[in-house]
Length: 244
Image (cartoon, rainbow, N blue to C red):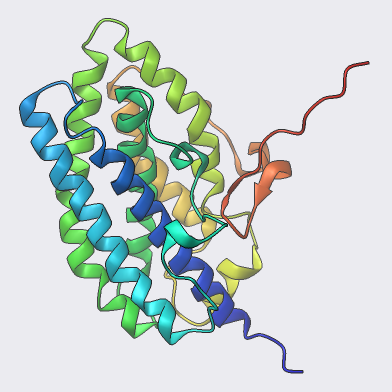
C-alpha cells in the first residue's frame, strides 16, 4: 500500500481550511445584511458576504484535482474546517465585526503567502482574491471604529477578541508543524508559521490598539496548543471537568 503524499495531503487541508472559513464567514455575514446598524452598512455587508462566498467557490473546485474523497460542498460534510467563531450564526453584530477583522485577516495573510507559490492552480487565483480583500479590510476596520464609538461597543468587541484571538494565532500552526513544513518545502507557502503569525499581528494589532482593545502579548509557547486541532485548524472545546 502506498503512503499518502504529505504535500498533497497538506494542500487538501489548506484548501479545505481556506474554503470553509470563507464559506461560513460569507454565509453568516449574509444574515446581517438586513440587521446591521444602517442601510449603507447592510448593503456593503451583503457585498462582502457575496465576495467571501465567491472566493470559496473559486477554491473548492481545486479539490477535484487532488486526492480528496469529498463531498466538496461544506454543507454536506460532517466535518467543518473552520474556526470556532464561525460554528454558528453570529448572535450579535460585534460577533460579525470580530469575524470580519480577525478571521478574514488571517485568511488574507495566508493568501498573501501563497501568491506566486509552487501550486500554480492556486497561485493564479490569489491576486484577484487579494484585490477583493482590500475592500473587505477597509470595511472591517471601519466597522471596528464605528462599533467602539457606540455605548458598550468597546466592551462587546473586547469580549469577542478575548475569546477568539488566541485561536486565530494558533491558526497559523505550531512551530515546526509537519503540514506547514511540507508546504514550505515544496515552495507552496512563502513563510513559516512564526512569520505568518507576526504578519497577522502587524495587521490586526494596530487596528485593535487604535480602538482601545487590549490584548495579551502571547509568545508561541503561551498559546493554548493543548487544545489545538491541526486537521481542522481550530481549538477543540475545553475538556469538561468532573465535579469532585
